[in-house]
Length: 119
Image 1 (cartoon, rainbow, N blue to C red):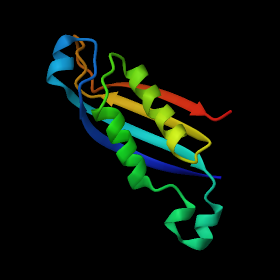
Image 2: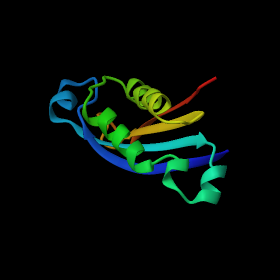
Image 3: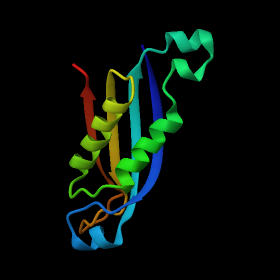
C-alpha cells in the first residue's frame, strides 16, 4: 500500500452560500491523498500499474468547475466520491480551501477535510 498526493491544486469555481460568490466565483485550493497498491508500479515503472495523477487532476478539475455547491462540505464530498468511483483507490482524503471566504474578520482561508474509504 502507498499514498499518492496532489497538493495545492488551484481552481476557479462558483461555490458558496452568498449570491455574490455564486455569481462572481472565486479561487479554491484542493489537496488530495489517495491510498492504493503501488508495489507493482515500483517494479514495472509503467503508468498502467499505478494511478495516473494527470487523470486525477482532470477529475478534480471537473468537480470544481462543472458543478456548484453551497457548502465546502458538499464540494469536498463530491470530489471524494468521484475519486473513489473513478480510480482504484481504497481511501481518499480531500481538503478544500476557500482563500477569500466572506467572513467579517481576518483569516487566511476556510478549509474542510473529508475522508472516505471503500469499506
